Image (cartoon, rainbow, N blue to C red; front, top):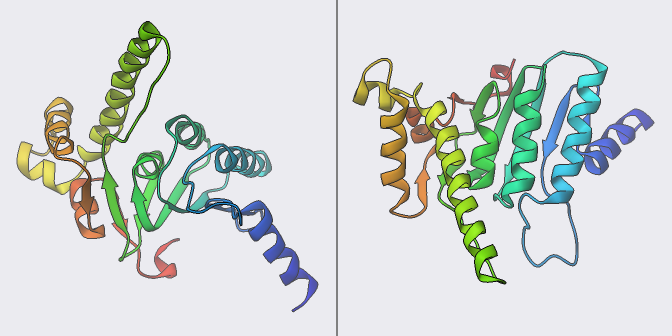
Length: 215
């Protein structure tokens, strides 16, 4: 293995990015102390923010994000979501394995959302906990409702372009009707979709089964 190959692998494994090919790998950090995958958290978020800004500063050419995550923290995930949505570069996200919980929301920020054949999509209301002074807990509960509304708005804006809702409500589905449908669906618990179903509902744009179809 020559030095160029070693440098490339070093960048991919240690920085989760390749500046030359404009690819970012949105994965968790590796730790021998962690008993399970921590999902989206501050280390992933901070690394990603630095990487996407580095590529944006270098040029406005398209960026490809390779994402594999079990979900995670709302605030860290929304930092990633906003950075993607705000980018002046055309962003493609390729989802591997699973696009679930917080990662299913991050997925919606891309200009193009590709999902591999054996990846599943899962959305839900998530979980929360609160403790402390009574009024502070009540304030947090109110804010949790706001978070749920943001999530449903993001999903609904994506789904209005999906085949399922166009067939159900017409070629220009009303976003409020779509949001109402999603609200009812999520009340049943975790909602799992195959790659094909994710495309049909509008959560993804296409299934990618060959790298030749990426460009």
